[in-house]
Amino acid sequence: MTDYQELLQLNLLLQSIFQSSYDGIYVADAQANGIMVNEAYTRITGVTAEELIGKNLRDIVKEGIINESVTFKVLEKKRPITIVQKVREKEVLVTGNPIYDEHGEITYVVTNVRDISELNRLKLELQQSKALTRKYLNEIQDFKLKESMQLLMDGVVAHSKEIINVLHLVQKVAKVDSSVLILGESGVGKEVIVKMIHKASDRGNFPLIKVNCAAIPHPLLESELFGYEKGAFTGADSRGKPGLFERGNGGTIFLDEIGDMPLDLQVKLLRVLQEFEITRVGGRESIKVDVRVISATHKQLDKLVEKGEFRHDLYYRLNIVPIKIPPLRERKADIAPLAYFFLNKTNERYGFNKKFHPEVISFMEHYEWPGNIREMENLIERLVVTVDQDEIQIHDLPLSLTSQGPQMTESSLKELIEEVERKTIEQKLAEHRTTRKTARVLGISQSALVKKMQRLGIK
Ligand SMILES: Nc1ncnc2c1ncn2[C@@H]1O[C@H](COP(=O)(O)OP(=O)(O)OP(=O)(O)O)[C@@H](O)[C@H]1O
Image 1 (cartoon, protein in one colour):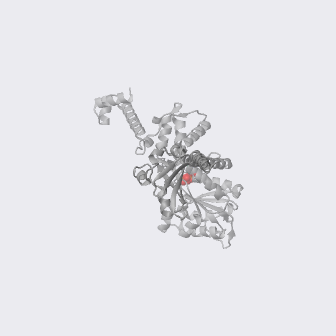
Image 2: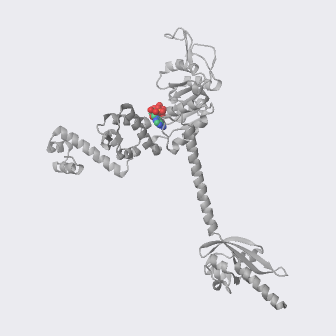
Image 3: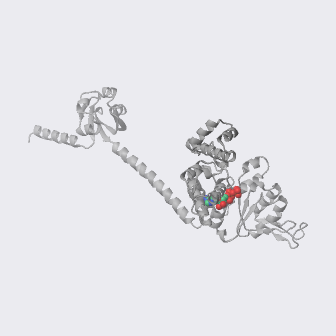
């Protein structure tokens, strides 16, 4: 084979390597004029060889075919450079490599182009599947939590993320003896949470003693909590009496409405928390006690501290782990499950089979529940017991509830207004018999009343 034939064959080989490369290849000279481009480049970018060959990259950028040129960067920095380039809105990964002559001058820049849309799609898919995994992991965790708390959760409804978070905290604090301060509006379930913590703790087989600091008259509270020695005060049992701290030994003391504890008793309580000992009223001896203290309040204790009505040192001592239970209106996911829970419970208790009209549930989901779960429990018992028909309807709800309007959705508000109108008209008609008299009492014309009655379907 002659040298020429050999050269020709080598050239053919290089051409076919160049064309068969899966990655796009573009070659420019030292002045940034396109001199070679392979088919893969067109496949990846959609830009043809005619659009590039013989053209300067400066013009190609100007025409908007590519957003920036890696060749210029390579020529400027004199080293291989990789960038993400936009070729006609498509993102590609390009690496420019300088080729030098024997004097060390750049003669060509060879640019390698790789399609990264596939890579981006995979990245997105990976992100999505990671998010999904995280979601499933959280669900498994919630499920595990519920499973491990199953025994304790008997009769406790927990669907919302908010209350599940509280349960996670319950599980953690149950394992230790730290003071827990439970914060939340009245009827929100503070006592329920205290019971769970106690039952889940090592103290579960010992007593849980509840003391409502607001319900016991102040002079009595001290002797109730700390006990008294014989002859401590007139009327005292002549043998003396142990207080709740002594009786709760080994267990948990739940100090409800702690914000109502008088200042002088707060000092004594601080001593229990710091030194685990008490002195009975009228006594001198210190008695060791082993109790865990959980306190609760619907008041803002920090504000009481600011006003000097609560000792700050006691506040910090009680507030080692605060658990805030959100009001029912802030955990709407719990409303329907709770409503059905109380419906079933009351049905079972009284042998009924009452149901809710879907509007009732929708109303409950929009209602503010100022009295929280306790208010709902009482309302449902009252409805189950007093409503005659099997399905509890929206007009069976007490007016005091349905007339509370601002937080209703537009449609339910309209329904409620109509309901109030219907009830009022029916009641006045029953009292006054004729539309003429009823209209006068309601302060509207007879024809307006008749129209309203037609609209509301009152016969
Ligand atoms: N998650 C729940 N599932 C079912 N019932 C609940 C739940 N939370 C609270 N309840 C019920 O709601 C009522 C009020 O709860 P609880 O007495 O624990 O509230 P509280 O915050 O301690 O009220 P207060 O501040 O008035 O003492 C109770 O009958 C309780 O059983």
